[in-house]
Every structure is written in structure tokens, then in C-alpha cells.
Length: 242
Image (tube, rainbow, N blue to C red; front, side, top):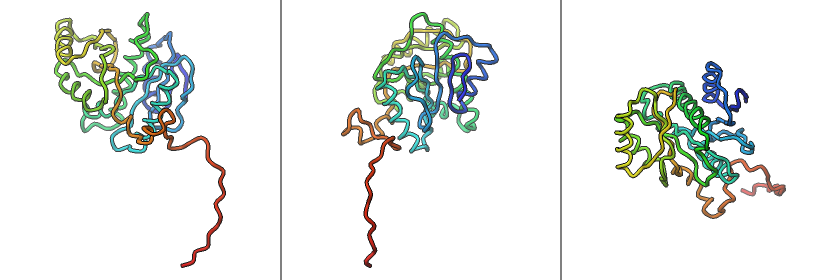
């Protein structure tokens, strides 16, 4: 775990972000915690931090289970949470190694941090829903962006902010705005100075957050794969009789 320029990280993606921040000498007014959802060692009790989590990939079923419970616990503690959907970036960067996918996600996280930090009023608020980050590869990427929205999210609210690559012209920005409006998505616009894509931040719930069926019975007492407490019950030894 490292701390640099008000960025606390767990995992490889966070280290990539730290490298970018170090190269630019980034100065931040807010504090950010970057981590991989589904890992056992994340800190859910940091005060004053904006949480930024990266979801597991499709094949990581157990990690998805852990991620679902971690998301619920973080939101229950009223922490602002941005989730970068790794599978959407994997789909965009087909046949690329995970290192390339994580590198792209790190660039986008860095762009989001800079944009969020530059806002006089926070774009995020404590909510019972996280903010989901999905790649939007320019105007031509809107169909894929919409497909990911409806495939990955259980509920879809308004797009909170659309982070624009500096190479996007005003006319392209207007066209993107129009096409997203046709999908029923409204948003504010903020221009960033890094990041290889345009990243859309959407308020909603990931569908895999319902991965824990017991939560429907337990409610707020969500099922934890590795509970902190156990019952001290001694079982008698039984001899086999067959």
C-alpha cells in the first residue's frame, strides 16, 4: 500500500496511476483510494476519501462475490464510490493482454481524478448507488457505450458527468450530447487533459451486485465470504460404524 499526492492504492492499477501522478507532479485537494474490488485486503473505513474500485473480470466468480459484498458495505458507510467496469474495457481492447487493459483503466482513472478534483462542487455525493465508469470511444462508440449500460447495470440513472478528451471538437461534443440525449441520458460536460478515451460516469447499480442471494433474506446484513467472527462450537468426534 502506498501514499503519494493524496492517492492511496492497493494493486497494480493504482500503482500505474501513481506513476502518472508522479510524472506530472500532480497536486490534489481531495483524497482518493484506488483498489481492486474482490480482494481481501481493501480498507473500507477510510475517512474523507473518494473510493475508486476496479471490478473483477468475468471469469473471476469468487472475486465477483466478494466485490458485491464490498460495494454494499462501502455504500452502507456513506462513502462516495466510483466503479471502473473492467469487462467493458476488456471488450473495447479485444485480444489485448491484461497489462494493456489495466494501463488503459489507469489512464482513465487518472483523468477522472483530475476532473473530479478540479470541480469547485463535488460531482459525487454519498449515495446508495455507486457511480459506474464506462469507456466511450468517441462519437462512434456510443452504441457500444449504450450496450454496456443496459447489459451491466441493473438500474440506470442520469449520466453524472462526461469526461471529454481534449481532441474532441465542439461539434463532435454537441453530436455526442444529442445522441446520448436520444437514449434518455442527460449529463454535464467536463474537459480533461489526459486519458485515451472519453469516460462516461453513470449513476446506477451493477447487475452482479445481486450476486449474493442471501442478501435478499438478510437485508443490510450482507453475506460475507470470510466473516470476521466465528462460532466457538466444539463438535464431538464420531467413530465410523460402517
